[in-house]
Length: 201
Image 1: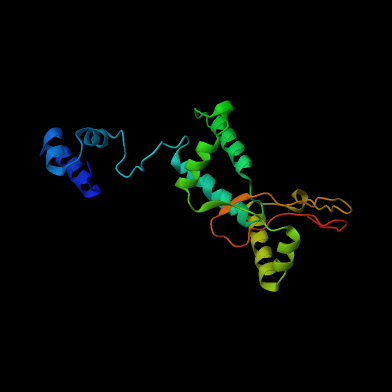
Image 2 (image 1 turned 135 degrees about the horizontal axis):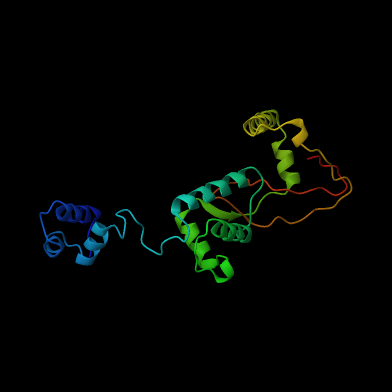
């Protein structure tokens, strides 16, 4: 039986206003009786999307999705596996019961997460050497230090809490792994230390 959202809303209203019984409302508006009961009782929200209910509260998941995109934009993208491990730890900290095997979300959760957050996709980040050469211009560097200043101010950081180091002679060249980032983003910054070159932090 097919019905529109407006019919469902009218059916719910007719019940709450005492106009019709559940059976009559179902007949008048063409909405299954059990569906009307579920919505009137609050068991199912009116704007709820079909499918399995998310394991963690949607508000919390929305925050996770936003943080994932922000991290990728700043060059700290996390892989699918890292995201799954972070969700596992989050559930343990918040004492959320899950059906996950060994407490770690699997591919089913990942597919559901992507369907609820279509703005996120797996992207291959640039190597730092490529990203660094592209980003070294006056406008980008100025914006970087403005953002850095805001971070320092917002977190009340002092000189004693800021460390400086270099990695002279160390080799960390690698082929970047796909990370979670905003879908359609053309350039996802990554991290790479160039062989034999000092890259200060």
